[in-house]
Image (cartoon, rainbow, N blue to C red; front, side, top):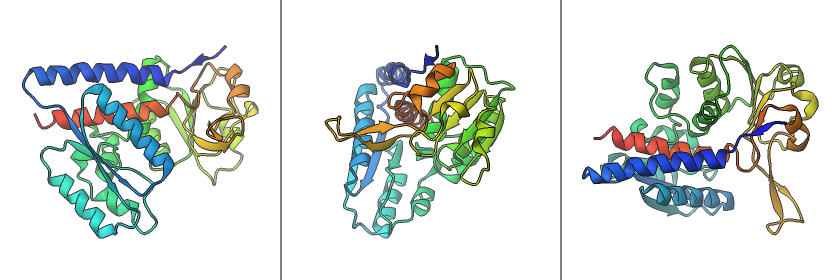
Length: 289
């Protein structure tokens, strides 16, 4: 029987640890960390994610500023707001919620964020620092995955880690972290990989992050593997009040009996992304003191 990796519980533990640190900072006469969140347009999922981030800020005692703009905002105007936040001494870190409207370059906006305020860990400087002895602010989702592995005391040294999905947000940075910090032997698969199952069946630790519901089935997983599912796709479900359910990239019901550890969707990696964002904001604030 597999152990369910409870990201919800671990993220609650982390938030409580942060809350105590914030309380101690205030007792020393320091102000609480302050995060700003920019959201553009009215994408329902984005507003849900931002709501979760604000809830976490309240739980840990952070100050927060929410900046909402219409989807018609020009790239130039948005970049001016980013520049303003870069120079605002009262803001320790900020994020620009993705996705952005098509007329705005995600890369241009991301790279205009000051690396020491980039609490999502998206800038080239922060990404590149993963390979150094002194990493800066880490990409939030991979950092959250590493935290789950650490807190569940999952053995990584010398293990075969297969990551399906080579995105800049999850797969690519996680491959570096698993190789450098966890000392695992890493295989990074992507949409051009031939015979995906031949790779996934070799994995002691399998991470799937592509956004294709139930892509990984039981015949693709080794007995006793650790399975970490990063996928969250809205799938139509008439039985649900909302009309949809969240599906992971792993066929959970059939894979779970074969795995030694497995993350559920929802409640696995998702809450850890927000917890990591809180860790990064605290770190960014502490760098100033």
